[in-house]
Image 1 (cartoon, rainbow, N blue to C red):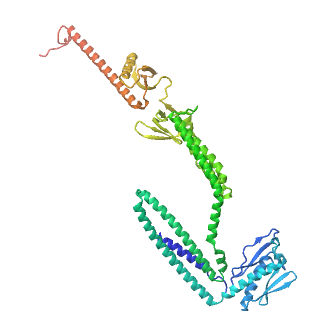
Image 2: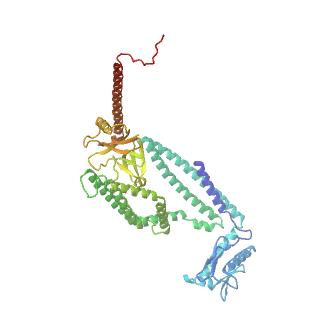
Image 3: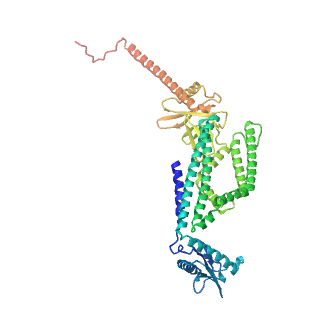
Length: 545
């Protein structure tokens, strides 16, 4: 990090040194390329004559078939030619019928015409002459002084000295900052009795503030260094004048903007405070309704929290709409464009979330589901844990928490076993298939006996057995009983199924024993009827010899 910071400072200094390198030709100045032209209201293009990085005058009208841009280029060329002769650079003027002609060492360079005067600002030809002569004299003096090698060597030496001083000063301040930061870290570690993570957060905050102050100090130093170095060279001296107080002007602009935004920010704070007060009142009222202290028609303990969230969301949206005109920069086109962009992103990207939230409110206020209900949503069966804004959470019998989007819940068939139509308990159903050879009355009795052996089934109203289908090879019987605790539904259904198997198995065993005894009695009488304890021989029996 330290090496990267020093590389950035070195790159900044290198760029500044490249910027102050004189870019003029050997004949007395840089090429006077005309800047981009500026169209006037009447359609005529005006051009500024620049020489040696300085604005001399603005040509607004053409003359003798030459456009303002051609007049500026020709004037700059004549100035270079006049200075290339090596004269003293004396500027003189000659009054002509349509204006004033300017000469350097007796050589004509350009004219100031009546049309070149800015009449809208009330400028006269005499005033324009004084201003133009002053600017041209300054440019000529700077161009002549740049030819002297002694002056350039002195300026380069001072620039190098200032650069070394800047680097040493920044290095010293950086070392001092590191040392001060170490002392602060040690004192905070001794005095602040905080957790390791909290102390690290405080240290990061202090280091960020120190680094910001350090960068601001370095920026001021670099600005002063640039202003000093640019002022040493005649060609870059205008840039030094423009750079003077640049950081200060930025700070003044920022502070002025902050002071100007204070009334609007105060109004925003007032609106936010009122919204916060109403939010607390709504929260207090919601807690009172939930505890049973207050009563509002249509709002009970099941829907009070979603209603509170909905009211608070609408309240803060209204507060934001009221505070929007008082926000700094809210009237600018950039702020309006950003607001439209954010709104478009939310409307396109969050359309699914808005649908989920609407589904959550519909489920809550319609009272379709409540926490604790035993439901079956599609293929998911279990107890409702929470009906949230975006999803409904269901705890299955195998202890899995399934999150179902509210839009899926609204479009699916939902069976709520905790909402009986009649009586305090819902129905638990168990189905069996028995062949036609079994007496149906006996099957009814066996199913009712299995229900009686299951302790958690309600006795009133009594269980009921129905024959729900007559298939080709069997009859389908349905045992329906009331179950009060629906959270025990899987366990009770398992116990009921086990009792049904036990009853059917024991009945089948008794039937088998009766059949066996009857068969044995029949064989014994057959044997007694034969008159002997042994079986009677058939007539064709042949004894063994």
